[in-house]
Image 1 (cartoon, rainbow, N blue to C red):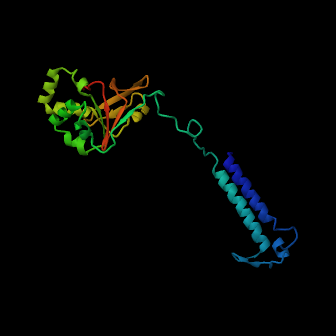
Image 2 (image 1 turned 180 degrees about the vertical axis):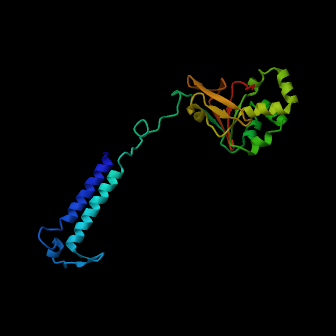
Image 3 (image 1 turned 30 degrees about the vertical axis):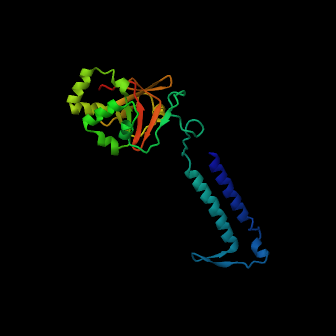
Length: 241
């Protein structure tokens, strides 16, 4: 029997005792002795005195408590691990602190288009793919964006082929767009191996190592670029999927 049930039963017994204390061994009641009129009446056709009424109330209180207590038998209360605190989702305790950029007043696309910036190359690809409006008004999204230097490592022939095929280009860019608003800290707290859905319908697998966050093995840099419809995080590579 748990503590709550014991306390409830003790309280009920105490209340029943207090009520029954009004019933002396010999006729009448303590209330009648104190000058209160002796109550006589009928209940369901049976004559009832105040002595019998008090007795009925006392037994009713005690019986109700016993019934409730017995009804709790077998019920258990699940207490989360850690004394009531749910287990943390943090995979690594030394995640890198993120630098906050932006005040959330501009859309993801507007942040890429702002000057000066290091994202003019991916902004140009977004324009070529015809998905600029999506990043302007829809969301929330989290764009993991390779900067100009990172995109510069992709062979020029690959970039040219992508520009010639808008469908493939659009899919590649959408592979870099997570559905949902995730700060760097949110990514850091996710379970290792979790798959995150992208705008293309494909998924990126999140992993952690030495306090760093990776998507499909590519490091996400600890920068939160806050936009009105989501976040941008610099990505140290290109998801060629």
